[in-house]
Amino acid sequence: MDNLILNQLLADQELDAVSKEKLEAAYEKINTKEFSDILDADKNQYVNFVQEGGGVWGVALVGYLYALESCGIRFLRIAGTSAGAINTMLIAALGDRSKNKSLRIKEILFDWKFEEFMDGKSIVKKMANQMLKNKNYFKRIGLSIFFLLLLILIFPFLIFILKIHPLYYLIPFLGLAFFIFTVMHYYKLFKTNNIGLNPGKAFENKMQTALEKYNIKSVSNLNEEYNKKGRDLNVNYRLGNGPEYYTNALAQINNIHQKELANLDIVRFRFFLETIQSTDVYKDNPFTLLRSDYSIITTDINAKIKVELPKMANLYWTNADLSMISPAKFVRASMSVPYFFEPMITKIDLSKDSIIQAWKFWLNAEPNNVCEEGVFVDGGSISNFPIDIFHESDIFYPRIPVFGVRLVDQAELGEQRGCGSKVILKSPFSFLMGIFDTLKGYNDKTFLTKYSFYSTHSIQTVDCSPSNWLNFFMKDDEKTQLFNKGFQAGLEFLEKFDWEKYKYERMLVALKEKNIMKQEAKPNVG
Image (cartoon, rainbow, N blue to C red; front, side):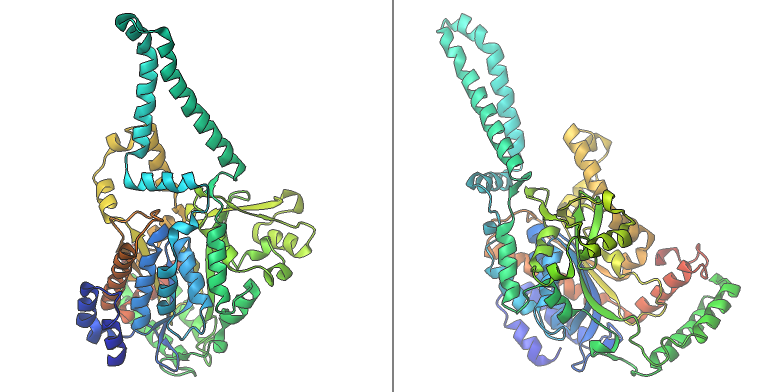
């Protein structure tokens, strides 16, 4: 990042005074730091990047991306769920990976009117608006029903005491009948619309239009453009594109041997070292197993599996299909928030051999055990932060780091931290929500518990409070606030990131996986 870029950022009207102040303070430090050993001809440094889902909080992801790209960070492998899937798709689709994408993504996100994505009945928008304005919305409805029933019970006594005409007794019954009729009507409508308030077609069309502006018309088209391997990436290893990576890796192994001798299983370590020395894989090609790709996470509740697209796309579509359908469909599948959006349903043509083979490969499923439809809901129900797909057990000495960004409501987390069993078990609803919150993203929580290394070295959180993640009525000033929160969080992460420490600690994780490092040693490493 040179002074020209800095001045351009300081002139950006979307950045507030706090963001510009933090940028000026951090500029010198960030500009001279190493974040990766993989660079392109313009000295951009490459990382793998994972983004958490979070509804309209996705605007904060764009701010975070803006900070990273403005500081010369670029991306090889990218992944995301729901809102993270939107950003992931746009990063992959909007031109050459060496270019700054966040400027254009920012324009797209600020141009979109989120409330247009609520393409259900007009009553849906009104109800959603009321729910956002009033946290006690359902409580009020419940109290209204309670008092209505109470009125029905006590009305006979009121008739007797007040000596009014008995026909007045019909009034509360009429109110109750109207309420029941309304509930039944919308329940029937809900069922007809595949158990979703909004079809989600408006969003898919908007996403498809955005991609087509950059000549991305099909999944095959995008895969061809973005998915590359090895030397086709047109990047460089920091120390040289010959045996330098291999030589440096051996030196680091020797360094670990000296520093961690007391924590190593020497027999296993020597065998590991001999294996490395006798393997020629990395000697003349530091880009071996290095690749760029994108991953969109969704959940198929019919097959009851986590689905990684486009990697597992052949479970549902043939190659001919993928040359026709827009990758916007992948994003639509990922952001299908249950009940708020209809699930995305796709027919599975079991007459196609490639599809049968895919189910056999991924799930060892025979044709008679394969469902005829994929029913996709929000990927966050299983994996809202899919950092696990970037964990490479086969690579000992890292060439690029994993960066991750999570979206949280710190105020809500503070409330949860102080609550006990009385709060959780206050009502059947609170108990159910406690179970749901525990199971949501269970895959991610399990992985991060096992590999705490990533929480320490790779992940930054963005506090999105007091905004609501389902506030599709968000105004431009709220978008700007979220964008700046993401930008500031990105700068903070880059300031504290230590590439050399990352590499060292990541190597210790690899040694633990191979049982070379004693498990009780360095418990904070992961």
